[in-house]
Image 1 (cartoon, helix red, strand yellow):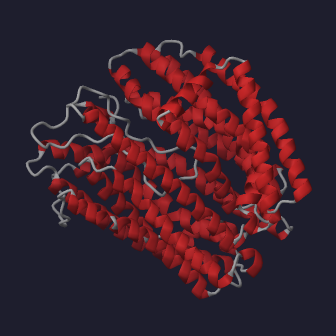
Image 2 (cartoon, helix red, strand yellow; image 1 turned 90 degrees about the vertical axis):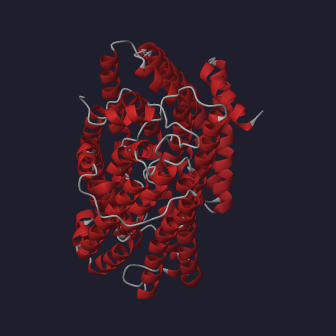
Length: 601
């Protein structure tokens, strides 16, 4: 009774519905597809349900569903990455690119702050509960929820579009003070802000399907969104060419060009949402508007969402501050002849930097989280400690060398990917990625540690931890803005990100140890991280030198960058594996075994 979210975990741990053909409770509730907060922590997810005896074939069904979701997530991230590359190619890495990046960040931020967090953390378990208890299998409740979300978001979109100039100023005073940049940014925002409506509709439809064991559509339909946006920017490139060749800027881009990009961005979310309707029909669900909300539990569910709302607010406030600092410093640096140091550069480097954690750490914890949740429910703290230690050490085997790879090879990586923005801008992207680099280690560790709190049905501690990380990150970023030259401010912000997470994971670790009342195998975990760093550093040094030498000899074009990245990566991988085996790091063997088992070898 101490935690308003405790019922979420009890509902999803409880026995599923009975009777022939009765649907089972869903697994992990995925995050909002296609959105990124850009802040220092992710909203609290609903944990995996605790494993329990199932009917024959149930385990294979869950494995199949997990595989479909994982494949959809991976393809979505890959196409999202391609989308980012083509946006940079079309708009460049200076003020014009920042105007689009700011306008696109707004709807995600507003959606998560207002209703997004509550949908996943509170209303989804209510959907499952209604399926168990209601005579109609929860269809009326789902239609009420969908109707309520549509009405609220429609009103929210109308207000947001009207106050778009104020929202742009909130995100970047520097852009708002530039008449040409402000006009473009506001126009982009007014095309992007209606996507708030379709984000919410997509999430509700997806969770209705998840509650009926249809997991694939929610994870795969964002790919359609990315394809539409890629095609839109491809048309822009076909007409205008890359920003490097066309020189298009905020004062030269045509209204038709802005309209094309704006409509294409909106159309992507429309297609993503509408693509869910055939799957709903196939699942036997019919959309019927229902306005009988009073007395149906909606108000209680909203009150329970308070901790999630506070969590995402603490998360998103950092994005607002960073967007102000990054666009200001980026504009000054561009005027001084150093493009590629603004908000778009920050967003692009962050996208690359977060991918290993999203693929590796999340996959490792997806396998361990049901066991951790079961052990926590049984009060078996020793088992929680062992699985937590395993998750940290196993994921670190891949995360640590990749973090040092970003430091050693960030420049050739970005000159290869973002060369269309110009050599100077692409190198600036690389420096920002290098600054992010080692911070990937505490960022990944924080993700693992917070899963233990969720397993103990504690959502308040992650909230307070997020507040601490946000305050630390904002303070260090502001210090970077004051002390560093404009061209290095965003790199300082990226480096501050890692420091903030180092502080956050240290505090979370101590709180978890105090809560569990036992040692967390800390000596073994720290020893593994130190030994992995000891193997990664001597691997990163020759890799970085090789990459630098190849680029000096061949230039920073596609060929030079590709050979520098490939050559440096081979050296880093070989030296790291040899050093790790020499140090007898057993977790390396474990991870290799997991990969081989996934590949069926």
